[in-house]
Image (tube, rainbow, N blue to C red; front, side, top):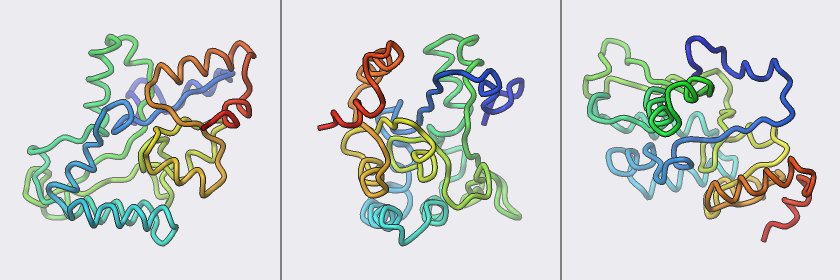
Length: 206
C-alpha cells in the first residue's frame, strides 16, 4: 500500500531505466513474522510447510492456502503485528533512512479487515484483506509470497535456501541467489555499468 500522497508505482510514469522491487517480511527482516505466527499460534509448522509444498506444486493457489493459514490464528490484532503491514514497514524504513527518504518509497501490501460482527481486537476478529482479487499474488518476494511477480521481472534475486528458488527452477524464471543485500548491490552496479548482462548473472549462478 503506497503513501497517501503518492499513488502506487507512480515512479513508473517517469519511465525509469531500472526499477527495483523487494519483499519486506522475511527478506529485509531476518524472520518472516507471518510464518512465526502461523507456526506458533495457527496450524503449526508441519501443516504450514505441507501447505506451502502444495502451493509450490500447483495443487493449491497461494491466496487460498495463505488465507486458510491466517484464519487459523485466533489472536486479537492488538496482540500481534505483522512485519508485512504498511505501518510497520514505513516506520522501520523511516528509522533507517529518514522520514523524507521513506516517504519516497511506495509500499504495496495486503491489509487486515474485521470479520462480520467482530472488531479487529476480538479473538478471531480479523482476516486478511488482499490488495486485489487475483488468485496469484503479485507480491515480489524472496520467501513464499510471490507467484506472478517473478515472471514480470528481468532478473530476480532469490534468497538462497528459500522456497522462491524452487519456484523459479520449476517455472524456468531467470534468477540468481543471494545471501546479503550487499551482493545484490554489487551485481546491480555491474549491470548498470554494462559490465554484466542479466543473462550473465543468471548463468553464473552456482
